[in-house]
Amino acid sequence: MFKWFKQFTGDGERGLSKMTRDLERMIREGRHAFDEACSVLLDGADAATVRGDLLATDERIDHLEQGIRRQILVHGSVHGAAHLPELMVLMSVAKDAERIGDYAKNLFALTTYRVAPPGARHHDELQSLRRAVSTLLADAPEVYEDQDESRASEFIARAQDAVDECEQRMVEIFAAETCTGHDAACALAFRHVRRVAGHVQNVVTAVVNPVDKLDFADEPKIPEIPEPPQ
Amino acid sequence: MPPLVRILLFLVLLFLFLASIKLMGGSIKALGKDTASGLFHGISNPFAGLAVGILATVLVQSSSVTTSTIVAMVGSGTMPVETAVPMIMGANIGTSVTNTLVALGHVRQSREFERAFAGATMHDFFNVMAVAVFLPLELLTSGGFALHSGGILTEAAVQLAHVIQPGMDLAAGAAAEAATSSGWKSPIKVAVSWFTGFVQNALATDPKHPTGFEVTLWFIASLGGIFTTLVFITKNMKKLIADRAERVLNAALERSGLIGVGVGVLLTISVQSSSITTSLLVPMIAANVLTLRNAFPITLGANIGTTVTALLAAMVTGSWGLVIALVHLIFNLSATALVYPFSAVRDIPVRCAQQLARLTVRNRLFAVVYVVVTFIVIPLTGMLIFKD
Image (cartoon, rainbow over all chains, first blue to last red; front, side, top):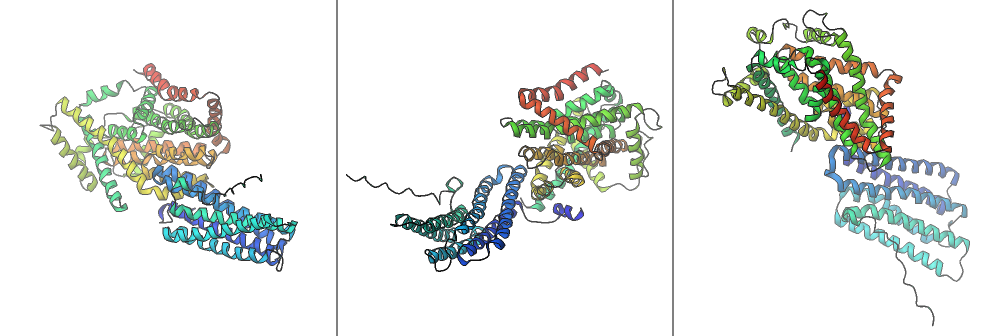
């Protein structure tokens, strides 16, 4: 109990810093989940072994998000509206970080279809995107922590490249003359990777965008509808 | 503002608070014994005293102001301790109006409001329960002690006061106590006395024989001083300890119990206001982040922590000031000891508050009626009925 009361007398971490640390942990856990899911999907790792770890990781991510929400409420009650914009940003980006874990689970779910083992169609493209997105997830906590706008802008551009490439791959699959079940599953995989890149991009846009502009970085584009043939 | 500056500001404000207490004692003494006792004659009935304690606290929205004013009055020897005990208990009830008003802010969301209102009113129910047990006990046991006509709480406080200040002479009156006090004096008391003398000199042509108008000026200055310094102490300390308070509250969300009582005590001592502590809990309870059962011990701790203000005030008053401050402490400790250890008893205020909140959600107007009736109509009626 006395150790517990040290929280009142010790210097400890300030509320907002603690929440930022927790958000960064969420992204790191998200990266772990993403890498694990991809290892089954693309490298043929043992699904049964990964499944348990993936679920536990996702649980940790959810727990961290709930903790951030509680901390936001306590911080708001104690400090009033002094840090309202920061709290709103945290609430929003924590949701994005939580979704990374969800999409990792979605990717893992595709293993039922043995999506793209080495040598299969789309394997190389997915592998390349996996590396790019995993690097984005590894860099995101530091970029968020730094709050350096130029670094964040560079990160957002890299994330946008990944998003665009996923989009391009999906369009290619849908536009192909023949589309097998394997292709459809790969299209889904590209979509899930795209969403992971989009959510981590959203987290970092908080560095450069005001509260009202958050969450729009990964807005899906609606293609122009071609003129009907005369 | 850097923390060191805030700490210095707190010390200055505390000094001004103690000076205000001293000035109030001086101004009441200057009224003369007959006039002063005439002031409190109407509330010698314990139920009238209880009602005055509630009303005064509701009016100033701070039990610390009420209790420290009472300490100043008792310490100066103008208010009998037995008159002050019910008033102190009334202050406990009155202070719970603030968080109930905070809960009204959640009125638009049914579920949120139900939780918030229950979270706020469990404090009311606990305080009423405590008074319902200890006021009759104090009255039933009154008159049997050598030094006072108070009851068992007062006697316990007298005994404790003797332990804290072994050389004190409670049998002598406050005036005699002031006249005979010699030897080592606390530097705080000396500094406060000097400053109070300076203010009295500034507000009166002849401080030894002030006019009625001048005494009124002293009294207004002291009351304003107590109120203002406590408001600023609370604001300053809230900013100084905000980060620590946040950490402790975050930790208390998931486990409370005795730790919760400790959190309530620490937070309230730090901000010198139980209303701040209990009001902080309301939004967390409303959002269901903090359960009623985890919040309840923090509320009990807030009741105990708030007694420190009166104890601080007693530093510059006569010995009876210390006794009434200790009555406040013993009353709240005893109420917690009576209610907290037994889950069946501990659940009573929580269940009553939940039931009341359910009724209130069905008709929101009932919340306003509850506040007005409990904190204004009943005490006002009680005061009119029981006034001598």
